[in-house]
Every structure is written in structure tokens, then in C-alpha cells.
Image (cartoon, rainbow, N blue to C red; front, top):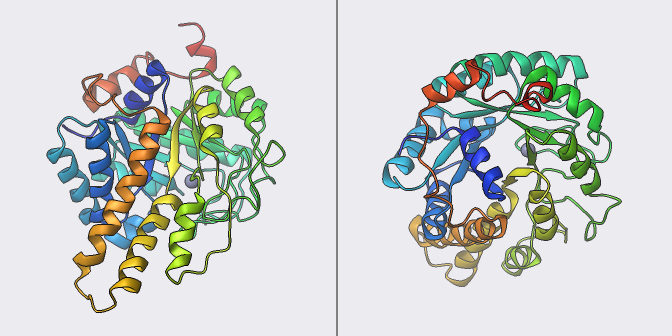
Length: 350
Ligand SMILES: [Zn+2]
């Protein structure tokens, strides 16, 4: 199966009332782990690469691995997404490779650190939307600023400094025409999200619900949404790791989000923890081993287990066969004739 438009994948998720996990990849084993889980649970899936991942793996290695995953799994719809594009050029180069979706994170300036102004964000995102939609490629934007830093990207902070304002979210959607919108509701990137189990004072699900009510046609995206389960932290620490105890986003809060317009859920930290725990265990228990396969295989299996659990929890499990992929060229026509336009003023009248 060719790579699928993320827009189609999310539109189908909206119809079916489920969410789709977007899992970050840097190497072959992570891609294989995702595909093992997708096959086992019969799930459509979003695979995403950050700028850091593209630099680490080199663009062509990573993209060819994704193409291999698509060829080996003809029954699984896969969208390939650029996570946190920092500029038009980053998005353009991802589209040139064959990515079917890009995130233009204009909430930060091109340095990936400094919060930008609303108008700067609108301008760069609109430019990416025009370019991407002509080619049938999906665009995710971001309004408000997420907390934390990952892969050198992020403004830092707790995530509470720049909570998304619903009025601004509506204006942003109207002026850019993004397909999907990442909003800041108190989540952060990285392992250290919350210092206790989050409640409404730090995780603003009410803001998310308010935005969905006003933007029912724009797919919402939850970033920094690993659950960071204690079991995964414990395995790392039991075998010599030194993680401070921390709390992620509880699954039940993500499920509440899914009932209120969240269609894409970004998960990276949980998989990193699973991989690291599995490798540490092999090193600690059998220090005589030195064949990378002896620890990469259990690492891959540990990640596949976490991914399969999330696919089931998000509700995407069992939906891989629901629809036939629409070629990207057809999707481009839908953008051109306005039938895929999500701008609130237009979508409401359809
Ligand atoms: Zn993110």
C-alpha cells in the first residue's frame, strides 16, 4: 500500500470516533516495532520523524525504511509525518522525500526555541498549507506553546505559560486552513511532564473541549502525551537507570480528549523508556553478551508491546481495513475544489 494521506486517516478516525497514535522513529527497529503492533492489532498508524531523527538516520535511510514498512504491510494504512517542522524549508524537504503529512510548528521561531507572534505563526503556516495542499499533503499547525524540550526543540517551561486561547485557535484555523491543530493544554515534551498525577489545575482538558466545540472540523492533536507508566520507569531504574519519578498524561484523559475531537496522539517517551529498560535488563542480567541482536530484539519487542497497548487504548485497533487509501493526487483535487477545506466559515456551510 502506498503511504496514505494523514488527512484521510484522521477523517476516518473522526467518523469512527477513535484516535490514532503518532509514534516517533529514528531507526529500523522502532519502525519494525510499530509495524509489529499495527499488524497484531490491525491498526492504521502515523509514523513520524522529528528534524533530529531525520538528521540522525539521514533522510534517505529513514524514508526508505518507511517505504519498506508500507510494502511489507499492504493491509495497514501508514501516514508518514514530519514532526515539529521549524520552517517552510523543513516542510518542503519532507514533502520532496515523499512524506504525506507535515507539521509546521510556527508557534516558535525558526530556532525552535523562541515563541513567535501570532501573525508570524499565521504567515509561515499559511505558506506551508498552500504549498502542501497543492500536492495533497496534510498540514498540522500549532497554536499556544507546549512545555519542555525534545530533540533540541521546545521553549522549555512547564507548559502552563502559553495555554491555547480558544478565540485565537479559531482565528488561526480560519486564516491558515490547517487540517490538524496541536494545542497547548499543559502537556510537555520529554519524560518529566508532571510532578504528581495531573488534575485540572495543570492539565486543561476544559480548554480542549471548548476548542473542539468551536472547531468541530479541525482535527485536534495532543503532543507530549506519553503516559510514562511507573512500570516502565521502574524497569529502567531496577537495572541501573537513574530516573526521577514522574507522571505523564493518564490514558483516561487522552480518552476524554478522543471523545472531544482529538484524533492524533503523539507518543515518544513511553517507547524510549521501554527500549532503554529492555536493553538495561539484558546488560545487567547477561553482561557477557555483546551481539547487538541480543538486546535490540528484546528492545524492539518491548516497544511493540507499548505501541500495541496504546493502539488498543486509543481505539484505532481493528480499523486498518475500514477504507481504501485515496491517492495523494486525488486528495490534492479535494483541496483545490474546496471539498476538503476545514476553515470554520466554509466547513460550517457544507
Ligand atoms: Zn510535539
